[in-house]
Length: 288
Image 1: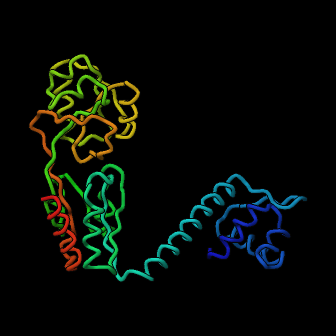
Image 2: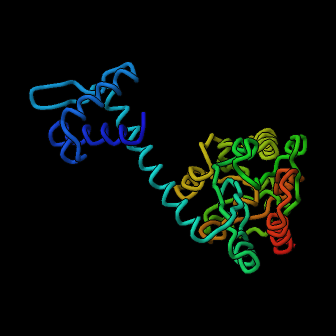
Image 3: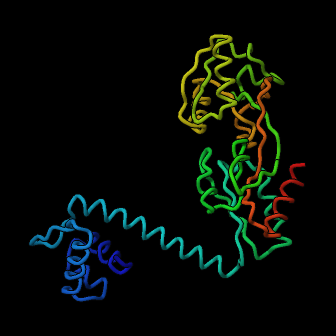
């Protein structure tokens, strides 16, 4: 199937009329009818039911046409982005990270980098919580990680960026927000949200707290859900410092514990670009 045939399906699905679709596509009705039949032969299922009024999508055709619309939109977007890139940039460095807050000073680093390399783009790619797959496939140049297991991945190199601890997050008017630092005993009588893709260090601490003071707890699906629950007075949570977004919406209280997160930039060992090396140096300088 080619892009023209995709257009035929999308237009016929929109108009549900062979004559009207053919006119809009600037082709004859016979050509459109022939193309749709050829596509259905290739797919081995019917897209349209021919009726006296025109054409109606089959259930499979409806699902397929919806998917094609999404693909067409993504293709159009990809072409536009590539056109913009080709006009201004000669190279691109991609960096995968869970959220913007994980590398809070990234905008400053990009700004400083572009003074020296105005023709090279730095493109952040936000992956959700922790998804190294695209980096490991070679589709990302840099990957933010706090996982020491990446040390054992062949052909990669870790560059230490910063160390962070664990914080207690509460509403700003919560009594705990007045503390300069929090301890396990301060959480007694509260409800602690756990889960949500918590890293091993945090899961271990959560379990320790539950076993030590018998705190009430419940599972929260992800970090954004947890923050919403905090504002809804459903509980409090503990989280790594790299989620600190400095919006001043919540109270972030340092939590007294031994658990720390060593945060790294992971790169491919065979990537010898001077621009990549200089960008990482800029990030390290800003964090130091």
